[in-house]
Length: 259
Image (cartoon, rainbow, N blue to C red; front, side):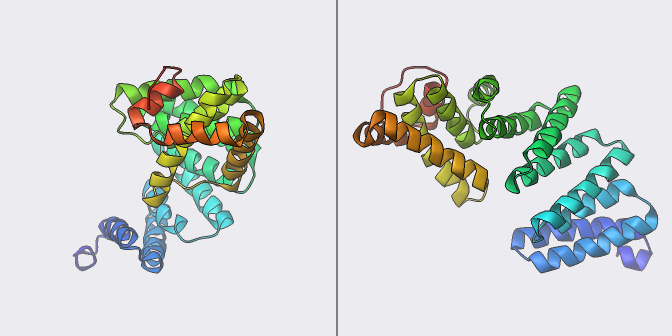
């Protein structure tokens, strides 16, 4: 219809909707083709915001470097159009890409700017995920003293709204912080609780772990095994896997729980 009407902006928006359909169908090639067509129209029209929206279609199925280039372009589009929340979301995504390829300084710059922007806008729902990812980055960098208050803040928010948000990475972060604080048995229990939630989240595709996160997990759990011994570690870990999400969050907040 848009083509029959000769409405190029409507045509680009229709391509964006079709891209969403292709994404949910798993048609990566179709999604990218629709994205390329839509971006070309947006550029022709000089509509930078629409261009930024359509560039998202080109971040699926590309290499890490290509995705980073596309997201940087989308970020510039949203900045030019004055859409601060979309810009913050792009910075959040860029931070995740940076962590994936080991650009930790770039990751920190992007996530801290994203958080500052979202805080200015009062975008609490976005801040939950941004702060969670920033806390994990801090742990990767070896800064548990900075990660701990962020993790606690996010856990309290998750508990306040009824634990409908994914807490798996927060439980993992809480395990790392508990070990740093010398509470090794609680740390092992939290690793068990986190592993159960992480496995479920990975299975449905809601999260994926980077090499840096996997290496952090291996180091943390390996250190606990050495401190506690295999038998005590396994017992504490199994205890954690038997906890409900609410119990696991209570444990992460320092409360006593019974399995």
